[in-house]
Image (cartoon, rainbow, N blue to C red; front, side, top):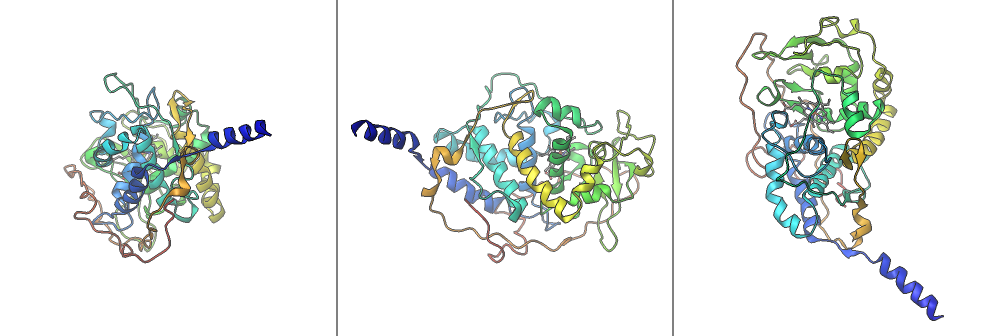
Length: 381
Ligand code: HEM
């Protein structure tokens, strides 16, 4: 009898969870509100949210994987200061709780993706959040080689993250949410008409003809352009060669100039992954993409570099998530797409526009039309 009691006590002791650190629930609440700030000219675009999703990828690139380090002097990280600076302010209080900075980036990444996935997201912002990432040694030189925008992405993702071609096709769907700016990368415009939802717009746009290649005005880079779909106004949509490789076997040179099918992408042979892209273009395909995206994104956030994974624990296995007591957050209504069409891009060369950095959350750029408390319920935890 005593032995039985001892076993029960041992199990109870082993299962006891730590109380939830207050900073975690506070930051989930902050992220939900700050990431929803909209761009001044395009109501469906949430600059900080998109920036954080890009950061999720960039901070996981390199030999030590997702390590909380980001070399802001690296040209491929240009533009990421928006999310890096935002999270830097939040780091001291977070580190005091004993969690790593790499886990802070991961929490931001989870909340951003969950907001963009809407009802197709994880059960809650914390339900699938994993912790235990090791921070880099800031004194060590890191080896971060980012993928070339003009090169096929498959080998890169296989070598760095151990992804299959299908997983690579899925993770590239993150481009749905954002845009390129000449001042950052030498490219410009949005990938999709609806940057608000992480749905299948990226794949629908890729499959929809015509795509033609042109030199980015004022630069020496080549990108793919597509006029907005009938009835829509605004700047052309864009795709990098790296995106185009998902559907066509393009053969760009170093500057990205395509020789075979620059006038019409359909003149290049279909890529092996095109059927995957096509399958994501239907409503059922969109749901399939979203399910797969969640898995692949989590896998990316576990990276230890070179295709290996860090050993992580579910946050709610370690901490008592049931103890959380937060006011319920109400998610904003989705915007009308497009709210504010952008002016057409000039045909001739122009000077690269200055990078249009949005105001920090709470200043300047307002919330979207629905940011007044109405709309569907957001799942905070
Ligand atoms: C071959 C792989 C990839 C290449 C070559 C690539 C390249 C780029 C480039 C050139 C930009 C424009 C940056 C700027 O001008 O501000 C960009 C933006 C972006 N990328 Fe990627 N990317 C790749 C993979 C990914 C992955 C795996 C993710 C996330 C999981 C991602 C998420 C984003 C997002 C969300 C943006 C928009 C950022 C914003 O609006 O601020 N990308 N990417």
